[in-house]
Image (cartoon, rainbow, N blue to C red; front, side, top):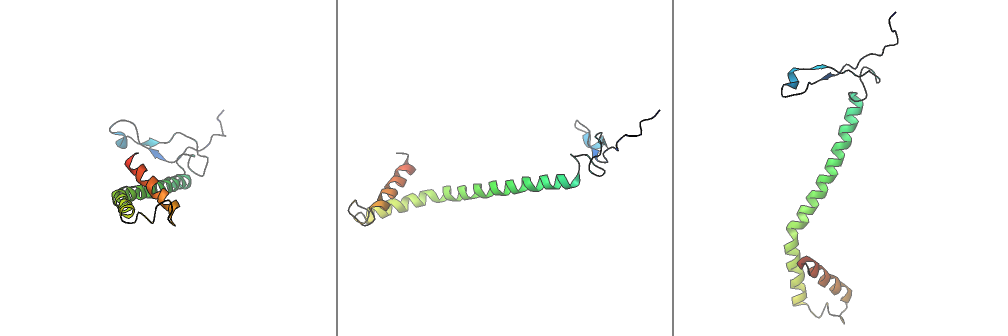
Length: 115
């Protein structure tokens, strides 16, 4: 007696292992649950997974670009802050109108120099 409840096999072709795996393709051994494909080889789910991965990559790439831009500008920004404190000391003194900003400028310079 034969088993009539056998599920269809996934239609995807899979590469074999080893250095010549591409030349040793075989049909996926999993059962087809989504149309003609298993959960791993379903084109819609593969595309969704690739799209999610690409979006994550784009976000990480943009963050890295921002950091690189800031790191490139950091020496110039430090020099500008030191220049402001040197040429406008009364403006950022404790009695001046921008004493809070002066504290932030001094703290940023100290942080940049590792003090």
